[in-house]
Length: 241
Image 1 (cartoon, rainbow, N blue to C red):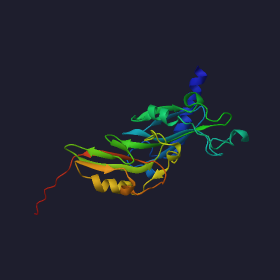
Image 2: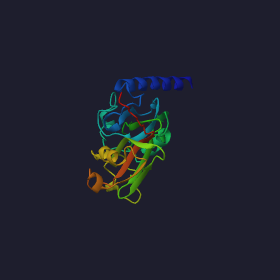
Image 3: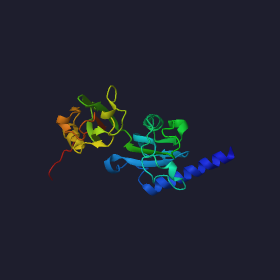
């Protein structure tokens, strides 16, 4: 029992310094990394403790498996690194359940949590996530549908937006696998379009369609994700002296 706790503490310490090395801003929510996403990779049988201050975690993608031969390869025999098409079909759900909406969470990279997608291959858990500031609201709407943002007596301030696809589960009901496979789909004009239609208004409506955003990934069934704040509208009465 003492040995297990010692190993787990050592894991936490090593992961902390890996995260610290990757970015000193991970514990802050004032500004997102490129495309608003931070990536973390965790090797098999390690625990990962994620903590962000003044914000909430929103998991973007997760995979337990192997997609290259170099990550988490030190000291491993070649035969354990050859399968680079290894994906756990259920990785996103448990990570999201453990972390979404929280300031901190713990995830363990082991086949007892994710099942074993490729027996004999040394695997790792790769997670990408958003750091959402406190008080942020979010909306997801599937392609061909519309979403309505409403801030009542306050006004909308857009935080981020993307029309495309960043996971294989959102808006997936009844869709063939071929329309869900591409998970790096981003419409570059997403934030501009949403901001133009909603910023500073009490309410607005946006359609998730190619006619509004253009088509960033032909053949993929897309959705529109928006995060936003409801803020007070300031009025300045200026008098010339």
